[in-house]
Amino acid sequence: MRIGIVGSGKMGNDVFNLIRNSQGVDKAVLICRKNETSKEINEKIKSKYMKKVSRGQLTAEDADELSKKLFASNMYEDLHDCDIVIESVTEDLCLKQGIVEKIEKMVSETCVIMSNTSSLNIKDIFVNVSMKENCAGFHFFYPVLMWPAVEICFLSDKNNDARKKVESFVEIIDKVPLHLSISSNLLISRILTAMVAYLYSIYVNFQISPSDMDYFVKDQIMAFGIFETIDASGFTIIKSCLNNFNCKQHENIMSSLLSVILSAENAGYNSLKIALNAEGNNCVEKNGKKMRFDKSEAAYCVKKFIADENDRHSKASGIRREEIVRALRGSIGLQN
Image 1 (cartoon, rainbow, N blue to C red):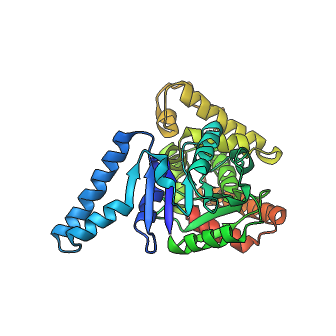
Image 2 (cartoon, rainbow, N blue to C red; image 1 turned 90 degrees about the horizontal axis):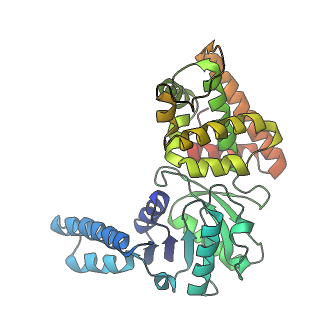
Image 3 (cartoon, rainbow, N blue to C red; image 1 turned 90 degrees about the vertical axis):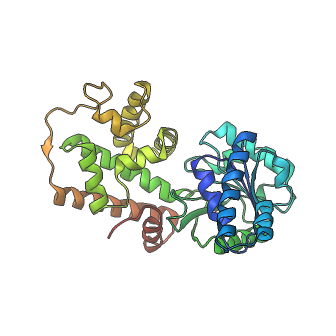
């Protein structure tokens, strides 16, 4: 199978490395915006192969062959023979729209074009693409090598060949798919966004530092702390999730988190944890007298919140609660 990835940022690189090291991949090309970036990536790849040659793990001929079929480029023309192309650029609708249009012009009529969006409506992303039956959302979770879950949502149910191709791809990269409809797309992202907003509301109301809050979350709830999750995802993605997944039920807590992120950003920070720790920083949300933090009570409240969210989304989507829980464990390391 021949795979293309467009976008050489943190997520794009992670996806490329996953695919590059998977069995059954005949070609993997990472499209970069700058030629300098693609050269740098190719030099790193070549260096890794040459180390294997020096250890006797590869022949020089094999290393040369691998470098030709697993590489980075700044030329969209290198996507021409791909079976699947994954868009993985920054979470900007106009940028993604332009990218998928450009991809469609370069690939065959049977190529499946997928977007790795975390928060945007795939109908909007593919609005100007002609072959909509070849389009899908395919959401990886970061770090890509760590988490087995992926969210998949096809724009149309008319192309069985495209579905079979994506199913084969999922097997090749050894991921566990959660198949979603347009109305339930990015279900795990929606639940995670609500969780993060709820956890932030607990932080605001109790006597606990950002570091201690992160420790509590990792100890009781999931693999990464709330502030680690926000900072690793980046303000752009978190803001997009809070704006696009906001609902009446969670409007207050989501708006509160969005407000403090905007304040931190306006103050020149790109880390909410650093912003909240900064002495005298005016982006820190004040909430009067805070209550003493009770770990057991907080853990109970958070787990009940998550259970309620799972039930709500299960009823709305028709997806069994057990599937949602499994996907949460495979995407954020949700604990029992």
